[in-house]
Image (cartoon, rainbow, N blue to C red):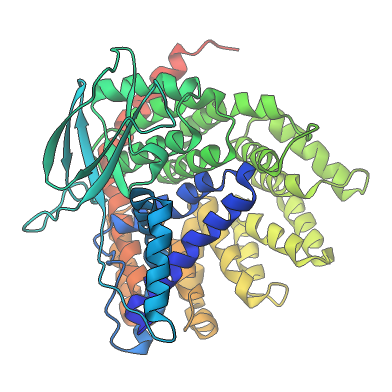
Length: 528
């Protein structure tokens, strides 16, 4: 590249082509679904903030470079390239690549592309009325003129869920599209393959008609994932009610796909963290148990013949989620297997260690923590040490939380791994969040000296404060970093403060309706 301004084209392209290669060599990995979960949705979350930035950022001084090594340059860059590749087609894309490489061989290249986010809104009938406006995490765009984009739109129906029935380029704020030969009982879905870099908001009737496609799995995995993720983001922005998302999540009872579960699990985790600020945290844990127990029962604890690596990942994810939520049978089995593991009777397989460690720690005491720290000391593999470090924050008792935080800065933990221990504490519980923030403030000098120049300082700040949901905490975080500057993390700090305010607004707006829904749900469920 000619200069750091064009970083996205370098890193965005690398992030995109690594998936293209894996998909070519191992189609059974279903890697593009993982791309949507790991890169596309991450970029969309960050890009909806006021403190986002275009893909291409003017860099004046080299010290500004650190700030742009983020999900926008990498993941949004890759997502936009993926959308262009899909729109242009593989053959012409390759031709263009060839021309680009030939033109700039032995030279430096620059770009002239500054794309941004989209959102499409749809109303029902087989006449589709489309409108686009900028999607903002705070709900509505407050600028003068709302920006517009050329948006490649694909539309599929239940007649053939894997094929686009219609492809159009939306180049104006609103347009009408007629879909021919669509039977009344067929669903209509926008953004086939979740390739277009935009969110979709459906009318209630259109959304309702898509639910059977989730239940019977006729919607492809990447579309099931995208639909749920869009709805979650729309709820977080206050455009729809969070209750609508909970109803859709319940439709995933037959879901077999690891990546789809992983994304849903992540969003439920965000909601759990938000509701840890209320007095009905236990009710959302009941919801988690109800959503995850059918797949937990289907998978069981032990691998079955012919399973692939995605099944092993799914088992770990589901058992961890159930164990953390306090699912009785999962907790008992985790304790039994942990005891056998520690006594050397039956060593736990690598795939089951994280969920088991997490479960026994969250529902354990000081003795459990001591055993975990002993296992950490004895581990000869760094992988096992990291695995333990990441779950230590699950412990709930205040004095044990303090012990874990002290351990994070000890000689036992490699400097680059301290961040995940403190972050684990902050994400583990309401008390952990407060304790981790206090610990960072109290030990700021040491932490800043360790990590000042690189991305770890940004990660530390993000992990430790993003779970807060009270307006005054945003002020406290902002004030602390005004008197303790961290230049390379400046953008991260602004994004964190914005997210705290968004969380607080979300909680005020939806807490009561979520609580009522969970209570009604409980009352209507058959008692076991």
